[in-house]
Image 1 (cartoon, rainbow, N blue to C red):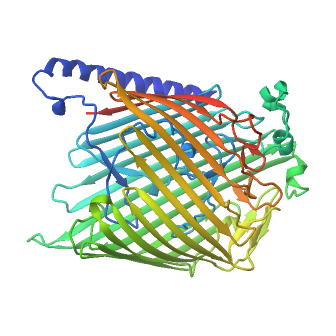
Image 2: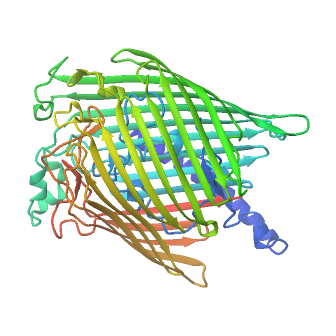
Image 3: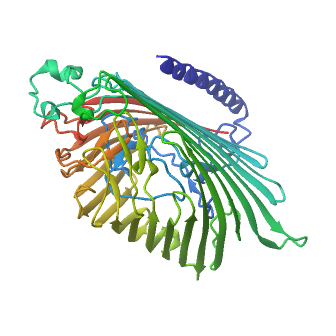
Amino acid sequence: MHYKSAIYILFVGIFVLLFGRVCAQEQEDQGTRAAIDSSMSISPDYLPTRLAPMPTAEFNPLEYSTIDTSLVHIAEYDPLLQTRYLYQSLGINGQAHKNMVFDLDHPMGFTWTTLPYPLYFRKMQDLQIYNLATSYTNIDFAYGVLKEFDFGATHAQHVRQADFVFNLDGTSNDGYFIRQAVNRLSLSAIARYETPNKIYGFVLAYIFNHGKFAENGGLENCLEFINRNPRDADIDNNLSSYAVMFSNALTTINTHGTQLLNYVNIKDKQGRYFGTFSHTFDFNYLGSQFTDHDLNNNFYRDRYYINTDTTNDSIRFYSVANSLQWSNYSPVDTVSGQPYSFRIAGGIRHEYANLSVPRLSDNSLTLFARTSIRLFKVWEIFGNISYSFFGYTGNDAMARAGFRFMINPKQRHHFGFEASFNRYAPDYQLSRYFGNNNSWKLDWGKQNLVKVGTYWTILGYRVSFNFYNLGRFVYLNSRYEPQQLEKAAQIVQFQVSAPLRTKHFALDANLALQHSTRQAVTVPLFAGKLSALYRARIFKKRLQFQVGLDLFYNTPYFADGYNPILHRFYSQQEMQCGNFLYVNAHLALRVKRTAFFVRGGNLIAGLINYRYITTPGYPMQGQNVEVGVNWKFYD
């Protein structure tokens, strides 16, 4: 209750401030409109605003893209609704989720665990810096009748030599079954500065993620839900009548991340450039706690190492990393249009990791290097490599190489090839763990992941083919225990992404075909999303409206189950998920900088069957309605 009150007060305050600010701007603008044309308006409807991924320790030249101001994606207020994401989830926004399209990109360094919230919990590589003349503000929220509330706010400001970015978003969702509520908050801030002579600069970023999840462990009898009689109005309207695994479980997770990137461009008195020295400081903290009482033995399976009545598993982990490197380009350089270029960087990274339970103090040292070469303006060759010494990650090695051929740069028409090799230790949680219901001390050999892929793209259309070979892959089996593949798994993947745009029609398609040779690494044979819409302007082009239809479907497969105690998905061969068509529709309106939408979700739920489940035990939301609003402000 306090969480919802805080959200309400926060947004009322933001709205009042911005409303007063905009009214003052509009009044001033009305008084000067005769003397100032629309491009010089004090409060314009649009100013060019561009953004690019924030530079981290492994920075590359920045590639800015213009911010999307169309209505096309306005009703995709939650990441799981976006056409580009094909994910299984726990049924409602804000909960744990997992990519249906296999992808395994392990970062350099020590990892305690990989949290199952990639679209909600921000990481440094998710942040973006802005290139703008003055300021940009975006506020949006969506309300799902009558159970959920999603909100977001972004503000970017340019002041002389500095740029500031602030992001805030969250979810409050009561859920539909017993013990399903979510309260989530993500906050990030970036400050970037460079001296007028461009000798020294820094990028400072901070991230805070908070999640409080009421864990029900899924339905005890999912077939009862699937096979229910649609004429049974009582069960249809009272989903809390279904028995769940956990009636009292709760997960709380907090993460903090701080990064400071300092750089000095080396120049002589004549202005000749001799490269850039940079230092990157990274601090990451993870605190998680799972609690439960009146334990359900159907899930715990008679495994109790501390207490048979109550579970209270708490983890505290932090890591500190320092990187020193030299490069012949700075972290804020943009992609060059020159026909020839040669970029190279290399350095050393020290990391200290500390874990509370089980106790761990670990040090590691990593050497890394990367390069990018452009030839004749059309060929780009790139590669990077890293190798770690000492500690848990000792002898970890990663290498990546590829090329891209530009057929027509103006149409973004090119094709490319990429190959990578990763040899690394699994998440430390899969090697050492001690809790009330799970305990192991295991020594694994290094995992070996090989990926070979090629792609072709033009004007945003993309066709790609990937081949994975997973050697000694460590996963969580159906007994909730880590296990290593005795024989390598191969995955073949073909994916098409198509953003069609015409004057009045738009269509986004994301289609994936996959095959895996091992049951432990299951993927659907087909998964795809299709979004089609019609848009036009009426009332002398002052009002823009859009109607759209979204479809999502995946073939049946043994989707991974979810273990909330470990915050991990696990392999299972008992229940297939899929073979259900999700249909959503929306209507959106925009007047100047303000957009509204109403969205109907899972419209055919119950009309055909009740198999709308992407994760075993966790039905998706039935027929539902959301309304939302979005404001953009430019100064």
